[in-house]
Image 1 (cartoon, helix red, strand yellow):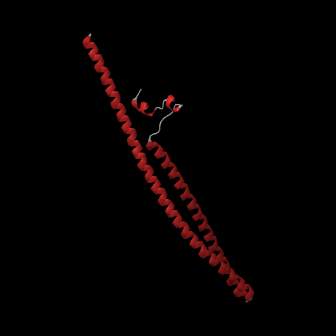
Image 2 (cartoon, helix red, strand yellow; image 1 turned 45 degrees about the horizontal axis):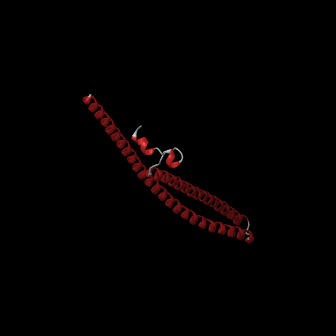
Length: 166
């Protein structure tokens, strides 16, 4: 039986069931993976909200252009001040909504930038932990091979001594 297996096997008597013991680095790597997925989801959600806000802003732009054209047509064909006033008031409301829309987009853009930074930080942390976990696995393999070599050498020496005595 290889020593690496000995390091990772959990005895049934000690824990009640068979399975593998996870190293600290493996547990941390699992946790880091989860943190990266959460950060990626938050970034995707923020980006989706920003995209919807941009779509709404574009619709407002289209409505502003359309109603501005209609206002010009009304002003050219007739001079009903009530109708012109209604168009002007509606255009003013659309412009106010456009200002709020730009503010919302700026806020959502900041949220996206922060979410992206957090996601990149989490990914960087995950990569560091993954490297440390890999180093630990390699060290365990080296230790296991060294142990096996010592065992083999010990057995060979015992057999040699037995042959010399015989």
